[in-house]
Structures are given as structure tokens and as C-alpha cells.
Length: 325
Image (cartoon, rainbow, N blue to C red; front, side, top):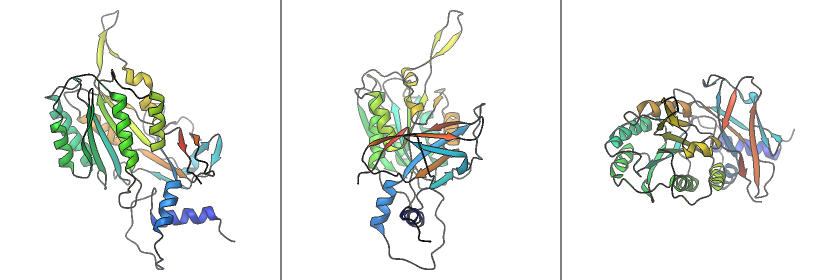
């Protein structure tokens, strides 16, 4: 039977770029073919990928789901899952493109950046496998201290240079800049599509951002970026004189949750447990990909569900911008 065009496209992208499924293997085709660089780029652009984290009712990660346990809906219509992968908790099989965004408006004291720098260094070491990292800082301004690099020492030096503390806070504008950086990074590391992540370290109180928050979420969804926040908690006394943690404006907006991320409350004296928990989160994700049926250049709603009872899902995007014909 003659194979369909869609099937051939799936075979081509799987064979040439291995964009989603697995790390590259050291095997060669017995029948080498002429390279099709132009075709590969076009097909990889078409592919829609959704990053999903699954947990049970107790919040434990669920790591044994299969492709048939998921359903992707585009504008309410089921889609065929063309590629499926579960990140191995012991080995990071997909590279990351990570932007660290540090609040230097006064939320973190200069001496606390030493602890933060050490914890971030351990995190970058854990997230190996052709991953790249960038760093920016923000107060009343947003400044990039290090563009994407695989050199861990450059990230450490970037944190060292973040020493101008004080001023107002532009959290949402900083997130927008980080998403823009990830969007512009189109190159794939060793033929594999990187997972795009923003890690913002802040007290969660914005005072001077100009970007609309709904637009920020839309841009994050379009870029396929997941935002994680490491929040330095603020506290207040309740009527019973019990010290209670205050929900921050960043948490109240649900921006982090709408991109499939989560907040990690931090003790500024030791960021190491937070970064370890974040590493476990990233290693416990699923990647679901499909080829869209339409190429109309319009925005389409996405929803991921599971047939497994008692499992809750967090997806990194609620929609995507379809390619143009």
C-alpha cells in the first residue's frame, strides 16, 4: 500500500533529526541517502510539541505513562501523537535551553548570591547532555549578563557580576525578555530539539513592568517555554499571631502554572534543595508531538488529557501559532 504523505514526513523527521524521542545512537543506515536539509528544517518547524508533567493526588511524579494514556486536543479535536518520549530521571535524554532570571531589586542580598551561585552551578552540572544556559538580571532595568553557553564557568561569572542591587522590579518584563531569547534560539543541539525553560529567582512582587500578563503567557505558549519560579517567601502575622506565608502577586497571576511550571519556595540561606527539586521536576516530564492538520497562520487552542484515573497533568502550553502555507 502506498504510504501517505504524512507518514513519509514523520519518517523523514525521525530519521534525520531525531528531534524528540531519544538521544542519538551510533548507527548508520545501510542505504545512505542524499541529505535533505531544507526538508528537515521545514518539517521540524511544523512539529507541535507539548511538555507534560504528571503527578498523582499526593503530588508524586507518575513516570510509567505511555503514549496511549494521553490525548491531545487541538480546538477540541483529537490529534494523532506522532512522537512520544518520557525523560529518564537518571539521564537527561534531551538538551535544555535555560535562561536564569535573577531579581536584584533588593530581594536577594549580595552575600546570598554566593549560595545561589553555588546551587545554580550544581544544577547546570546535573542538567548536562548538550544543554545551554543564559543569565539575565532585573530591577528597574532588564540586562543580559550572559547569552547562551554550555560553559558552566561563564554562568558562574555572570552571577558574580550581578552586584548592582536596588531599585524597582520588572519581573514580567524580564520573563518576556527570557522568552524572546529562547524563541530566537532555533538551533538544535546535536540534532535534538531542546526543552525551553525559564528559571526566575525573585520575591514575586512586581512594581514597574509594562507588558500585559496575558500577552506574556501567549508568548510563552508560542515559544513552548516553561517558567519555573524560585520565590523568596514574604511573611505576615495572622490574627492568631501565627507567622503565615503571603501569596505573591506572581503566584496570584498563575503565569507560572499556565506555562506548565511550578513555584519552589526557597530559603535564601540554601538554594541547593530547591534546585535539586527543580532538576527532578524536569527529569520527570513527557514530550508529546504531532503534525498539525492546518497551516493557516492562526492561533489554535491545545489541551492534553489522560485516561489514567487519579493522574493530574501540567502542560507547558495551552495553544500554538500554526505555520503559514
